[in-house]
Length: 379
Length: 172
Image 1 (spheres, chains in turn yellow, orange):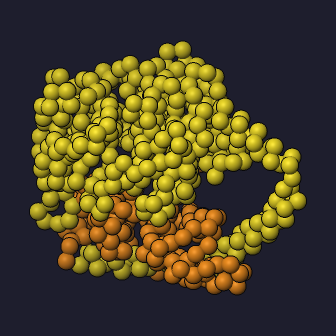
Image 2 (tube, one colour):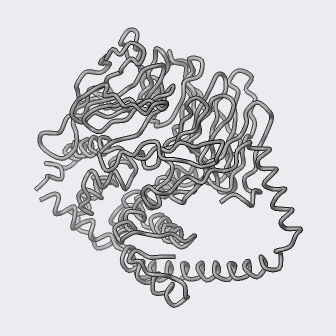
């Protein structure tokens, strides 16, 4: 009864005729403007097809290669139409990226081309995680470890509705979901970690209604966002003692651990010590600008790397947590995300919403700032 | 640009037809998603307009009308999420349902209000599952979130609704 009433109530939410008229007009105007610009550009490009322009393009390309040390990678698109890069990681200095979480590509610095490393097809698999020469993925009924060197796969854990969550500090975190008996979805969850060094499997949260989303981990600590019977928020599990402590009441999906400090995105950028002390908001360049958003975060040693976006610009910033020095590493024409680094280079994916984007990189520690808005050869 | 039915959009008349078709076909759905997220009609219309403008920003190919519909839903949900995060909008207050939807009955308004009191991430899942009739797997593909997460969020949303509405939404 409630369901039918809900459906009939939702039916009452309709677009007004005025809205339809306005939107059609706006769309038509925009498409006509685009067509005019396209025609003008066509004419201009014919006139400008001179030797001077070729020299210009070559110099821009050379500058880009010097600055980023790697030309932008257009991710291979033989996967699902329109899907974007969902995950990136580095293993032995080689960049791997996943699309839709189901196809993993390996990028070759030598040929500048990507090749498919693994396809999970239409199995209800979730994200592929990479760590020290191996990848880990779930088929929904087992978790597999595949060597990136010889391609050999091994099943490491088996269970119904089993999903990989995170790799951190030589541990693979995963959970098992249990179906709700009186409706759709899952109602109970059990959380484990698999020690990649010893091969030992451990439960850190027994089967219950508690719902945790692992965000970051080091050798001892696991940070999760979640809901428990004792409330919601960000929690830290001490894996050596099996104890749990609440760090903040806010919610987060992205963060990293740097020297016993957890830095995370919860609308703004925050930091909190792993013992729960000193919850602080971190000021960022451009945070007062209109439509300001933090799109991604990663960290290594003393530095956190943060991708931001506002109505005016898109940046990647580096913040040294010890010295408090901040610098801009990249200025992009589109949003940047999927940050990953090995300490030598920072890789990122540049794309707006579900548009096809590209991957670029910037060398670290050399004072470079790459301005992709000026790179005419990028797109 | 190609539309969902493989329609080429090379001439302005074809473009006009495509725009007419797409607005007539999807504007109610996009407004519903945006309204459930933004909680007031004026913000919902702004967000919905941005969704349609994104569609003509650059050429894109949709394999089928299902693909086109899924793309629009994803963009709508993400655009609303972004707009909600923006500081200037966060200050905006919710406009009472009956001021936005003037003909809605008290009973229906109660149901919608219960949905709109849910955390934002649950609202679109409830709408896609119960109203648009998508399966958990399809919602997972549309939203780019793990199936297990969608499953647990749907369960949690239903639990919350049970406390707000006697009997929840039921699954008849």
